[in-house]
Amino acid sequence: QVHVMESGGGLVQPGGSLILSCAASGSILSINAMGWHRQAPGKERDLVARITSGGDTKYAESVKGRFTIARDSAENTVYLQMNSLNPEDTGVYYCYVQTPGFVSWGQGTQVTVSS
Image 1 (cartoon, rainbow, N blue to C red):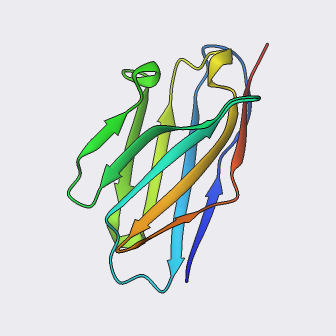
Image 2: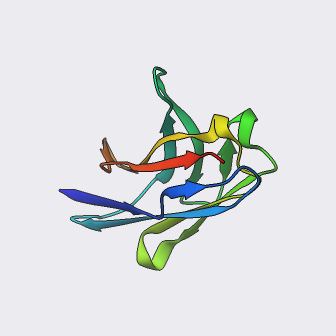
Image 3: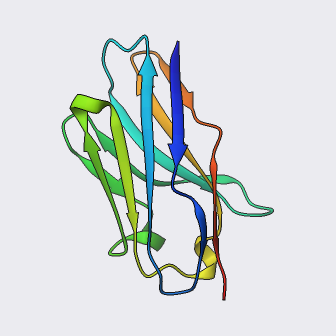
């Protein structure tokens, strides 16, 4: 069983920055990818960013140039640096860990962008 723990959410003003962290622990033989999804109020959960074990990254169009995902493979940890935040970035951010044949999710961390 893989345990996923997120941290780093909070309230930030428009134009501000936040860093989200996600650590995976438990029975992990290998990790194919880690990433973040976001669920805004009244909307579906959508991919924000992900990074593979090989370092390949993918971003939602709305966050390209503002968000950066990075991974510490030794610690099974992924980070999401979020800059130039705007109110549309508000939502619950969920980290996921993709291992062979399974995807594990964290409980989510709230990010609110508001003045």
